[in-house]
Image (cartoon, rainbow, N blue to C red; front, side):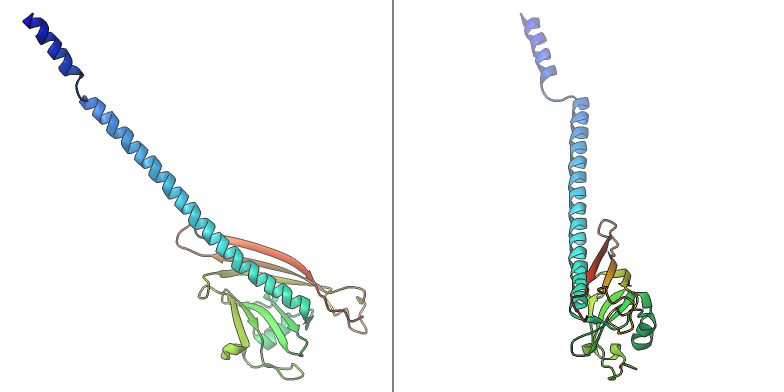
Length: 214
């Protein structure tokens, strides 16, 4: 009887608690689950940060291109081939990334990029537009729309394509049956040391003028 009870007790002792191997397996599975959950959390956080950066870039870039489109609709094109004019009047470093309008008060307006920034320029010019004051000397003559220092956005490319290439409202024009329109292409970037937040955006729109001078 005694040996029988001892045998039962030994068998019971073998069933109580974890073995060392079982503990190792449990710890390994717990660590594996922790790593998996952490990875999912990090990925979700990174995607959220990327989505926020992209949304911010899209909103600011869309606002800028809509502002340019609105100005084109409500003003007249001053120069249909503005490269030389942009260089002479505004010292635009990239002439193709510059466009000049004249508003209903006979004042010049321009959009141009310089140092990765987009500017809306309203300079003070002579009545014959032969020269203008240096717009960067007076903060009242320009508004920064997009800039790394303003909203963290870098303008990587801006192009204006005007059609037709000559004033259709001129008396000697061969394009008097065409309404002016311009295609605007804007490429922006939200640079960041975090690769998940470093995003790009490309916007393009074509706008027709609402001014009729037939």
